[in-house]
Length: 189
Length: 204
Image 1 (spheres, one colour):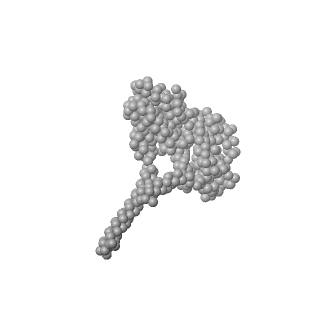
Image 2 (tube, one colour):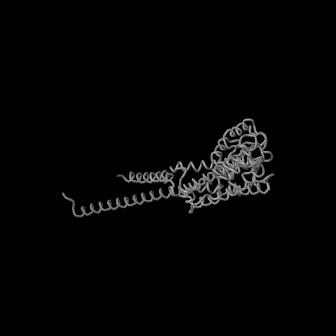
Image 3 (cartoon, chains in turn cyan, yellow):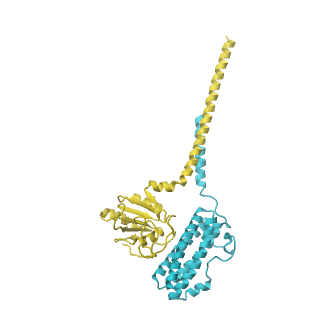
């Protein structure tokens, strides 16, 4: 083999290796069933779904324009984020749901923080006027505080950068929304 | 007649010199090949490292300015924004529905739209009909807000997203498209998935 052929061969194999490296990097193995990523995506989707349910109740029953707008914002934003998280689970080949108890990925079992009981939602749907608005705000505040805990844990421990990024965005936006909820709460009293 | 011993030795030495020169050339070629291979690997590593910084420098090269926006609050009333037109910050509780408007929109509402991932195209007074049509055509796309700006605008048309701004001295459709591609509903918008409908305003 001539020297030139050898040199070309070396260059080509290096480029090939680089090409393989670039292509295979995105195809890293998907997060495992027991990973923080999967646990966070599943549990946060369920947590968000209750916020959507409460917001929908408020949106359809409140007389307050400001609260109707806020409820619309919460419902649509959190529903879209459910879509994003379930999209990940589907792409990872993992079932969207589990029959196991939630929160194992956070290191402890037990119910998700800040969730309202089913009875509380039934009661909310029976209220009107200022009592409806006050109850909605109180439930949503507790819900956000719990969601904040989960999102912080996801942001700290998830292995995928896109999962950590969404978790960080949830932390930031729900922190801001807590301030909005508190100031609305004090204006109703 | 066979060569004399002297001639044989000379020939032998000549061959040895040739062989030594060939060996030196061969070693030099191998060293050059090794250097070339290492340089190639080095370039690939540097290229990979530079790729990580691509976003910032790509923005700067495209003339897009980046701003750090502190965590925003919902407020009532007017906000004194640090950047004109604003690229984020405190905002109204209701967002401006995306689309095109003939009249200026409240910046506090448009900022809420940008929090949801919308791009806000503001244009100066006195745009030609052609330019106006070009800018307003972008409002057919989702998550685009188009409105005139009263008062001094730093360019003829300005494209703003949360924390990002491109000031254009003329209506340059390809540059606006590139801005939309890079910054509409991007990771820098604080509320991924939030809507640009169901808010305030009736677009054209």
